[in-house]
Amino acid sequence: MGNRMTKKTTHTARHQAVQLSLKALFLATSALTVLHPQTSHAYVYTCEPGETRCVPNYNKNAITENAGIKTYDLVRITMTGGVTKELGNIKSSAKWLDDFFLTASRGQLRTKLNKTHTIAFDPMSCKEVKAALPNFKDQFYTIRVFPYVTKIVKERGERIPVLKPLCGSSNAGGGNANLVGTLKRDFAHEVGHLLGLKHGDSREANGSIKSYGDGTTIMGRSGSYNYSIPQLHWLGWTQKNDIVQLDEKALRNGGTVEVTLRPTDKNTVKDSNIPMSYVYDLSPDKRLFIGIPQSIASGRKGAIPAGRIAFYTAPKCKQCRGMAMSDTLIGSIFNTKISKEYQIEGLVINPIRYESQKLRANGTGGERITSVTLQIRLAP
Image (cartoon, rainbow, N blue to C red; front, top):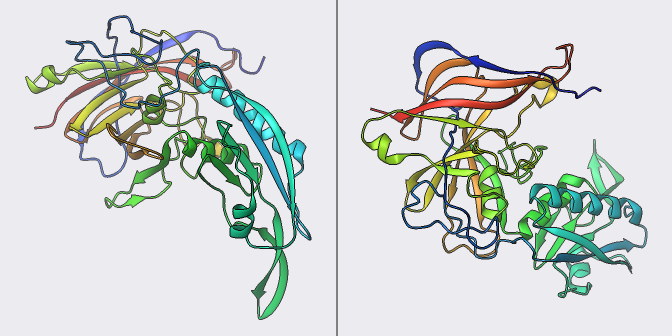
């Protein structure tokens, strides 16, 4: 089988005492921390007094275990002279979204189609169509797919009729995900907004923020396996031992902490003794998350190596409402196999060891990074 995995290998990075100032890309993560059993639901946990390594989730609306199946409606909008995706295509993408939520939430968010509606309109504007559409307030959310219509564009001085989305681009609000097509990631992106997620941004080398620039989350522009680690935590789709606070007392006392991280991938691993992310408080309202979004190479021709370590800043969102949880990808360590020191947000981080598995028995199919170990200390 193409994806059969064989033996696990532990590697120690070639040690170099090279310290980089980090313009754009960096660092790595995680270690075993034993926390008290979770109270209430398995994913909606309480950080008990004295649990200094526990990372609180302030999302009061987090979907919880045993919450029951959430139903939704699909609305296919047609227009005279326009073209709308077939209902079968729409239902297929919605079913993919059901499966995605079931996996990414570890069974906490279970969604099911309630009804489909096809509503026809004579030619009118997107705004007019939205105003005329019924609201299905009894549903968890409604997915509405809008038509393409003929619009006149100028090209080399000529007026040419072309098919364009009636509504320009997809968006969400008021319990509705408004889509111009049936791309699966667009379904997860727009319904993600309805779950309370904002866009995933990135910080450029010059310090500017690039909107939608986080390629590790569906809430950015690029394709991704999943939502980002801060977003999964905010949604309540991680367990207490998945997201762990760095030992800030040891760091403040001048110590070096050693932590080991596992990849997030599709968020299917439960009850692991290796955390998925380590967190460092940057301020009373802001956190740094350290994690490994994907275990295998991705991008065109594997441009993003297996086991890339990502660093995010995200708000704690203690009083957030609506589409609130954003993240900013501020750096990455692309090569975790070489020991180098990187500096980010007041921390010095050095990847010292990793574990991997071959994807094929004959060793020709690349590798899957299963964990990375980091040494972390405060910068001088």
